[in-house]
Image 1 (cartoon, helix red, strand yellow):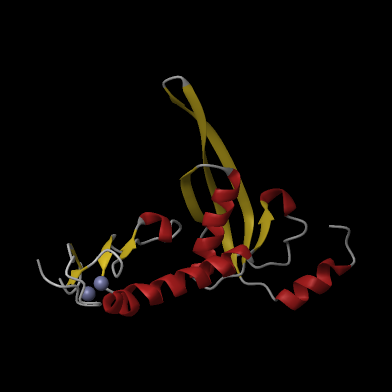
Image 2 (spheres, helix red, strand yellow):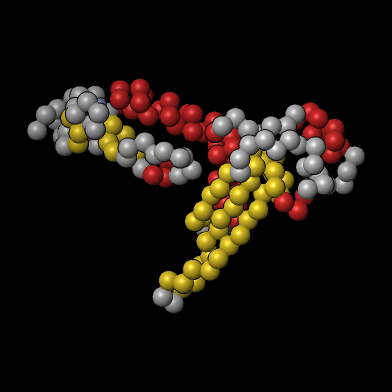
Length: 165
Ligand SMILES: [Zn+2]
Ligand SMILES: [Zn+2]
């Protein structure tokens, strides 16, 4: 067994997926699906040495977290809010997500896709769920569509400043 390439610990029984360097358990970074659970493309799950992790994975995590933060700020207008959103131009094709576990996840996934392409609004959002039976259990699967758009945040604030909602 080789020594850990990061701390020289002799108990290096793990291997970096990128540089194939030997790693001890303390120095190894592990990536799993949960880290990027809204991402369109998952980085390969695996074990990384600190140097490869900092170079390849850390910037991806920072980028992902930035998109997720922007997704949470996306202005969402449901299909029933046509009156409120009528000033927003619909130019883009609708986004679509499927197989979501609940309503909130469906909206966040749509917002994530919008934020990923630089949009800050979703209009005509339409959600729909269906029952799925697993033996004795019954759950719901959600899907949704929405048109990504850009709105001027200041204009939006002024527009809704006088309205009760
Ligand atoms: Zn180590
Ligand atoms: Zn490495």
